Length: 179
Image (cartoon, rainbow, N blue to C red; front, side, top):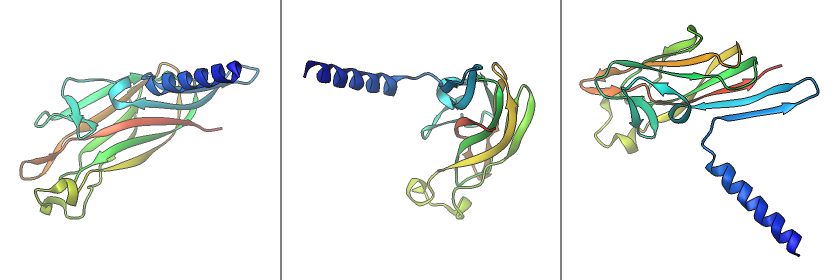
């Protein structure tokens, strides 16, 4: 009985410690010849160092109003290999900010955010309920990524609606290994 209780307590503690872990999510396994690449998630808030004009905007990392553009960088902590990159952004009704993702200074994905609502600039003052922000995943393709490579996100605010802006809000970049 005591052994069962100890196992339950150890399992609960492990679960709590895992939930509180704020480090980059990197999973690796070993298969005889060394580490095998598995998923890596780099969070906008916790893993990237950014220019000073980024802030928490509605739960995403976004540019401060009227600050122009900014960049965030992180070193890739995973095992070297080929990965499919997915960028998660938070769209807004009032603009289509341009963005790019680079590996060691080479742009691997760029474009503009879609708008979160077809109402666009006609969204009413209670936009949070009528035209809320929407998280969107962009497929950034398959790329060779090596341990220590510099991953960079660039965003630029856009003012499409007479003083209301879209602030290049984003959440994360996920790296999924491919064979």
